[in-house]
Image (tube, rainbow, N blue to C red):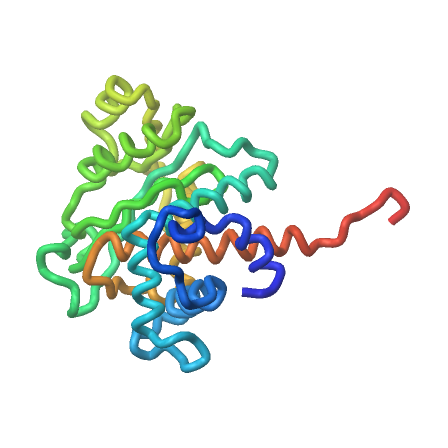
Length: 268
């Protein structure tokens, strides 16, 4: 992180238990060094054991990452950054509309067969990432499943959790994979309108579809992190934490870039 990025994220970091007087052993490493090391791994796609000597030893970095993953601190930092980005864009901290879609990716040989499967539609043996984003493309929630999981089945888990966290959520745009009984189920159970954006039957080749392009761009953002080009994680919650880590870096850079812009006066 640059100094401006660290200055912004430092005040948004979750407070460790020992620092808040809740007990526990004090951490012996700087948070900035640890977060930099995790960002380096996500961005460059290296193995944990290939951590450069400039950072702390890899077992310490992995322990830090695993502790934050299990305690929900990665999610907490991600939520705070997203609210800061939305506020800076003139939006409310909580969205009222979202876009949902999925992406199938191949997995490494270390991934257990219990958490991987074959996606017959995409012809990919691996996992599927189900993303729910706001209208800015910022991540609201993510669910990683075996690739054989249908979009409708994943939405039955993803959408109720999103409605619980975002009470203002009233409309979700999706593609044709979410048609059927899910539309009525979402309306009756959650009070959310599931709006299907269909591709024209006359269209040939690539076509930019209203609303749906937002989540497609979010998938493109994630694939700029080399760790996410293929799923290397043994656990699905680790995959979800890495996805949030990629979005944390993106939002941190965006906030720092906005903060570093010179303020224009009437004279200029």
